[in-house]
Image (cartoon, rainbow, N blue to C red; front, side, top):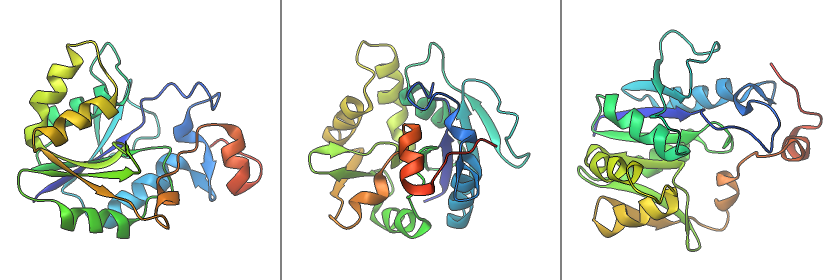
Length: 196
């Protein structure tokens, strides 16, 4: 397996009220925290998926513009898969800062040559911290041309087609998949939110 990684930073951040990527978390902006996590895993390449090239993007990363019109995370994952050079893509949302390198490495060990790995908490998939094989691209592209853009729906099809395998996240690990969606979420873990 040759792992590419993409940081998904193209969301509109409506509930947060400002760009999540630059919101402070544990003393640094979320984008910086997330890239540090991805770098520790040692991917073949690091991609940044967003609507436009962010001013904060490090020069050793590759900008990938979301496929317009934006269909949420589906656009970002599909766009990254069209340019990646690896055999698999680990997609990570910028607002999921509790994901650890240890967890990503464990998912890599579950991944096979032509199948990805999809965490599930109960019946709900966590598609924004998942590994997608290159073979998923046709399904993602087809979904972009349809009417159903939910990553829950798309990953259900990928599992049904044998392109991804779901695994149940343990109760103790479920908290690692939390998202920071609102200022209150930052305050809960950090005190007052800061923007960098």
